[in-house]
Image 1 (cartoon, rainbow, N blue to C red):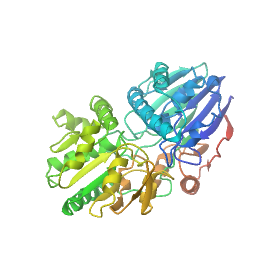
Image 2 (image 1 turned 45 degrees about the vertical axis):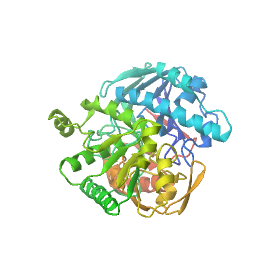
Image 3 (image 1 turned 120 degrees about the vertical axis):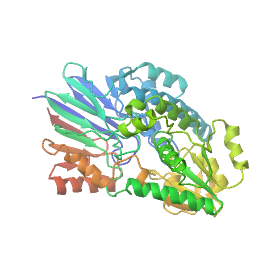
Image 4 (image 1 turned 180 degrees about the horizontal axis):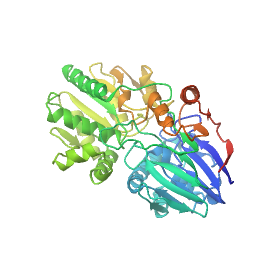
Length: 454
């Protein structure tokens, strides 16, 4: 029997800042090192000293390339981490473009705050030198005792659950879990045979609309906006959400389900991420692979415009008539969507459609909760546009599907740690797992460390 220890250092009482530690066989293995996000793109908590000495960590495992899971890695490297970083190949490629984009945002926030940025481009380049990739379902050793295997989380391109095995006993770290079935990706894998589980709970206390219902709502929202002669703003995460929406819009346009309208993807980061998706279609589900093989470019259709430069972005304001603008960030706490919200949100003929999770304290959350004046990028913006929420496009499993996911390991699971969620969601999901599956599910405290037997 071997003793192992699990530490909970981020995304424990909140959604962002994912950061966990697994120790066994003399190896310190970190899982994710994400940015805390709130009112600003990078919350002030990111400036604090790590609770774990970076130089003491041997390996960093990365579940996927969202900033709340990767955004502090260059800071970790800057402060002494010299181990190996592992992920799937798409996560490695996406992380590079995500982090280089983040450098620019951090620099702008630093100028505004009168403080140096928490890291710079050289730190990102040094980080990528430490990176090694492994495909799904190809176990690899970490030291003499621990074996790691990546299995598909179905959340974004390349997203993986970490299966860490010691003495034939397995603990799974889920990262974020996809809202399967999704238009593009394969379904989340089972965790059958796992003994311990650390799982997310972003939507642990509520359910989404179904896939058909969400498409109908999206389609109707666009039609309503066109009917008013207005502009529809969609704050969209550059990674996965934008590509998923493009897939759905492609189908609507090709089947003449929408009136003619200009649709803009106004995000250099989303454009780069979409290029990675295009060349990584072997990771898509079979249905989407079949569509692509038939000759359909699922990310391009008539009257779709990718605006990469600032000049192209500003020119959108000069185009007359109804339009749809998708831009990052998804929580309206940075990026080009802030400029469009300042320009369009004050007009009652326009609309804002929120299609993803809005973290506490973000402008997107304040808009979703009905605040009439929201501060964005240092400026107060009056929200007169019609605001609607569409949870069905969330990249996260909802309450019922999180319970179903946990149930795939019910025969062997001894303990479940419910994390990556606001306290209300985590507590609700833990109780539901206890009630419905009769499993030991707990919500750990920030900074807590737990010893487990392997």
